[in-house]
Image (cartoon, rainbow, N blue to C red; front, side):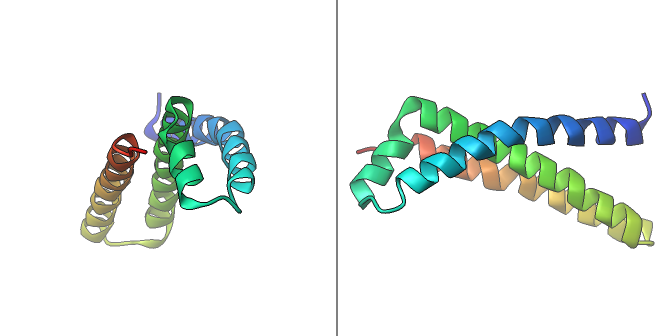
Length: 109
C-alpha cells in the first residue's frame, strides 16, 4: 500500500474513532462544568474516564499530527525543513499525550 494511501486511511479511521470519544467528552464536560474541584478530580479518577480520556488524547494528537504533516507536505518546499518539522511534530505528538496520560493516571482523591 502506498504511503499516501496509508496516511489517508489512518486519517479517516482516526476521525471515525474520534467522533464517539469527542461526543462522550463533550457530554461529560457539560455535566462537570459547574462542579467543584473534588468532583472534577473524582471524574478523572474513575477508571472508565481515565481510559476514555487517554484514548481521546492519543487519537486526537495522532489525527492532528497527520493533518499538520499534510500541511507541511503541501507548503514547505525545502526537504530538510520539512523533515525536521515532521520529526518535531511527531515527537510532540508522542510526548504531550504521554505526559498528560501519566498525570491523569496518577490523580488521587
